[in-house]
Image (cartoon, rainbow, N blue to C red; front, side, top):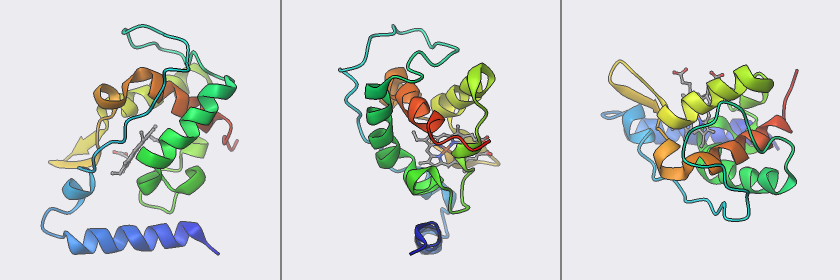
Length: 141
Ligand code: HEC
């Protein structure tokens, strides 16, 4: 069964049903809270580098947080169905971390449309870095 194709068809159906507002409506889905209490505290200030890289607990939390908040656009198990970039190809290391956190915090909007909603304030940086830690395990060179 080709799940990527099914989720792409689902996304097209959603877009078709909301043509007037298009991607705007697509970008307005409520974020799902993530329990990060099991992870070490990293303060309020946003870090430039993933503090949870390789942390097994963070990877587990990140996988579930990704499934609830990112998979509908970026694809199940991070395999993109085509509507949003395939995050398995995101650069490893610090420059990849910085690009990841930029998008996670602020999302992406242009020409008056929300392509990706911001997650920084709603989910917090512990959840963001946990998702990044899980994505690192999915990296495709
Ligand atoms: C409503 C759909 C949607 C959701 C939900 C979403 N994204 Fe995105 N994301 C996009 C789109 C579309 C882009 C491309 C934006 C652009 O190029 O302007 C993108 C880009 C990105 C990028 C940059 C990728 C690159 O190669 O440049 C990252 C990192 C990212 N998203 C992470 C996430 C994470 C983590 C989540 C969940 C917390 C998430 N996204 C949820 C649609 C979404």
